[in-house]
Length: 403
Ligand code: CS2
Ligand code: MG
Image (tube, rainbow, N blue to C red):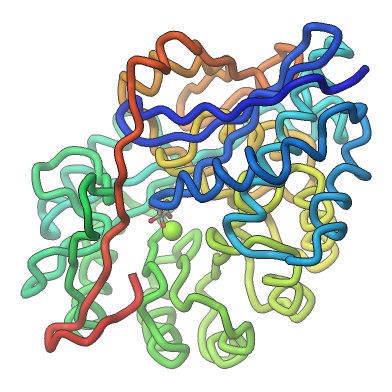
C-alpha cells in the first residue's frame, strides 16, 4: 500500500479545527487531528509545505519509521507546532492501518484492557452556589467524575468560567487576545471552601478534579494540595507549568493530593523526570499534541513502570478525531486513568461523525475499523476558518502572568 495524496482541511464548525486526510492507492483514507488552538495555520502550513511531501509514496504501515523520519530526521525537534503536525500524520496512518485490516485501532496496539473508560467533564459557576448547582446537573447527566471550577470573589474574569452560564470557550475570534485577571491570594483563600461545600452536598462517591491552569508556584501548590487533602481529589491539575520539572519535587514533599500535568507537553522528555521520579500521578499528554499514537504508547509504557496513569487532554478545542484516538489508546493500555470529555457544539457534530458510544459517565470504544471517526468534507466547507486567540492573563496590577 502507498500514500498517494494528503490534504489539510481547515474549518470552523463552532471553532477552528485542522484535519489531515491521507489517501492511499487502495482508496482507503485516514484522518488525523492537527488542531493547535489559536495557532491553527502554523500547523497547517508546516504540514502542507514540509511534511506531506515527505510521506508521499511511503507505505502507511511503516508508522515507526515514518515517525522517526519526521521527528529525528528533521534537525529541528520538539515544539507544539512540529509535534502536532507529526501527531496528525501518525494518527491518520493508524486510522489507515485499522481500515486496511478491518479492525478498530485498539486491536492493533494491545487489544482490550477494559470494556469501558471513565470520563470526566467540567462543571463551573460564578460562585459557590452556582457551582454546586452545575455539579448537581452534571451528576444528573450520569457523570461519575467532574472537574469543578468556580469564579473567585473579587476577580472579574477568570479561567474556566463562562459568564453567560454556557460552556466555557476561551478562544476569541478577532485580531488580539482577550485579557483575564488573576490573584493567587484570593484564589488560595477561596478554593478550600468550594471543595468543602461540594463534598458536603454530594458525598464521597463522586470523583472531583480541579485545574489551576499553571498559575501557582511550587510552594503555593503545596499549600493548596494540603488544604484540599480532606476533600480527596481525584487530581489537582497543572498547578505549575512544569517547564522546570524539578518544581514537583518540592510539591511532593508537602502534599498527598494526586497531581496531574502535561496537556501542553509534546515529548517524552517533557515528562521523563516527572515520571521516573514518581512526582506525578497522571500524565495529561494527548495524542494530537504528544506527536501521535506511536510515541504516546512509549510514554504510557514508561509511565506504567512507575505507577503513573494517563488522563488525556480532551477539550472541545481538539477535534473528535483526537478523542477517538485517545479512546483506542485508553482501551489498549494497562495504565489508563481517566479521559477528559468536554463535549462538542452541534456544528462540530454536524461535520465529524463520532462512532464511540458514551453512557453514564463512560466511553465504549467503537468497533469500526480504524479510529471510528469520519468527517463530512462538504459540510466542513460551510464553516470557514476565522482567526482566534486564547486569552492572556494579568495580575491585578497589570503584570503579565501565566494563562
Ligand atoms: C484545559 C483546556 O481542558 C483543560 O484542562 O486546561 O481547556 C485548555 O485551556 C484548552 O484546551 C487550551 O486550548
Ligand atoms: Mg487543563
